Length: 369
Image 1 (cartoon, rainbow, N blue to C red):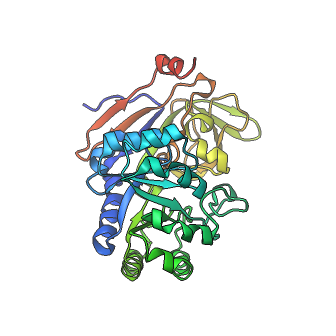
Image 2: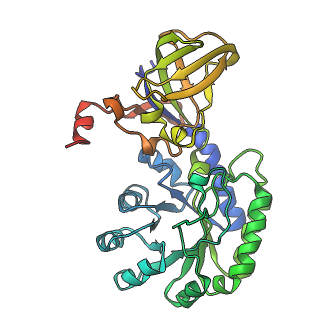
Image 3: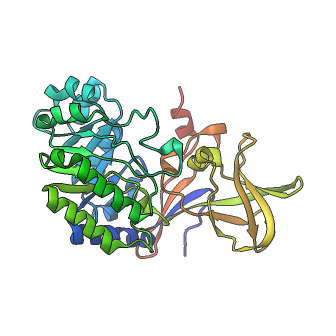
C-alpha cells in the first residue's frame, strides 16, 4: 500500500534524475571534463547517494554549502564566494580542496591562510549568455570576477586555476562554442600556465536536443590545447525535469476569471519564478480550453503561479503538479506568512515513495528568534 502524501510537497523522481546523470557521465567519459554539483542550485542531500555515483564532487557559494558538500557528498569540494571573511577562509579550508576567490584583493588578503590548497580566481571575460540582466554575470558594473587582464596575469604564479562562469540557461551550443574559442584567443597564454579551468554552470547540456557529441569534442579539444583539466558546475542540468511541487486546490474565486487558490505559494515555495517574473509549467492537470489563474495562499497580491488553459475546471480538492521545482526552488523556500513548508518526498529508483523530511511549527519557530 502506497503511503499517503499530504500536500504541499516536493516530489523528486530518481528515475528522471538518473537520465540527467547518465548524460553527465557520458560527458566525463567522452571529454574528460569533470562535473561538480552546484549546491547553490540544489542542495537536497537525501538524493546525494545517487548523484555522487555520476559526479565528481560539489561546488559551493558559501561556507555552509562547502561543509554540506564535504560531509554529505564527498569527492572534490570546490569553495567559491563573492566575498569571504577571514573566518570564512579559515573554516572553508577545513572542507575544500579548491578555493576560488572572486577578486585579487580577496586573494591577496587570504593567500597565507590557504597554503597547500588549490587556489583559483574567478575571471569576468566581459561577455556572457543570459536571458535576464538580473542573472547576467557580465552585466554592466558586475562585481563577479576579475576584469583586469594585466593584474590577473601578474598573479598567475600563485594560482593553479581559473573559473569562467559566463553562462546562464544557455542551450545554444553555437554560442557556447563561439565563446569557448574566444576564451582561448584572449586567455590562451594564461591557461597554459594553469592546471585546471572551470566553465561554471548554466550550460543546458542535458536537454534532449543538445548536440552532446559536439559539446564533448569542444571540451576535449580545449583541454588538450591548453593542458588543463576542465570542470563543469552543473546545477539545473543535473536536476532539470525531475521534481514537482504538488499542491491541492483550497478554493476557487471568480474575478473576471476563475482564480484557483492552492495550498502552496510562489512567494514561499517557488520564489525564483516570482523574482524573474516567469511562470512554472504544469504537469497535472492536462492542457485544454478551460482558462484559470492559479494563485498561492499567501497575502501577497502578486502570489500568482500564472494563467493556464486546462482540460477541466479546477475545484477544491483537485491536485496541481508544478514542474521543475528543484533548481533554485527548494534552496529558496521560506516561511513567509508562516505557511507550512512543503515536505520533501523522493520516488526511489525501485518506485518506493519516501518522505525524507517534514516541517512543522517547531521548525518555523526555530528559524526566528
